[in-house]
Image 1 (cartoon, rainbow, N blue to C red):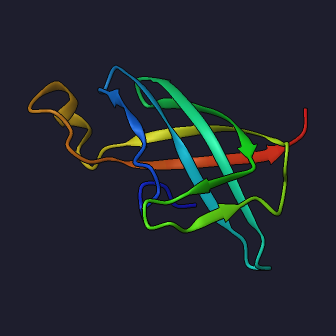
Image 2 (tube, one colour):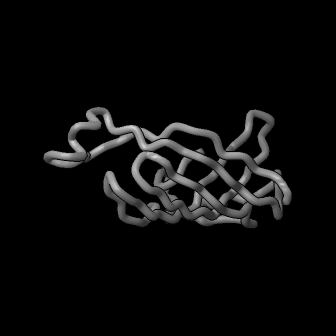
Length: 110
C-alpha cells in the first residue's frame, strides 16, 4: 500500500510515544492488476495501534491520476499494528523522529 506518495493526499494526525491518532487514504495495487482504495483512521496507545477503515470507490492524486477500486469494493479494513521506533529509549528523552509500523491489515466484510 502507498499513501502520501504518487501525489496522493498526505496522511494527517499526531502521535507521541504515549498516544496517536491519524487518518488518510491508501492505495493497494495487487499483483493481478486490481486496485483497492482504503480510507482509514488509526488510534494508538504506547506501541499498539488500531487501524479501522473502509474501501472507497476512488481517489484522485494531485497529479490527476485517479485510482479506482476494482477489488474488495464496499468491504471494511481492520488491523493491529505496532509502532517501532529505532531507539525506544528516545521516547523518554529527545523524542522519536521516525518509526516503523509493523502488523497486519485485513480487508473483508463484517
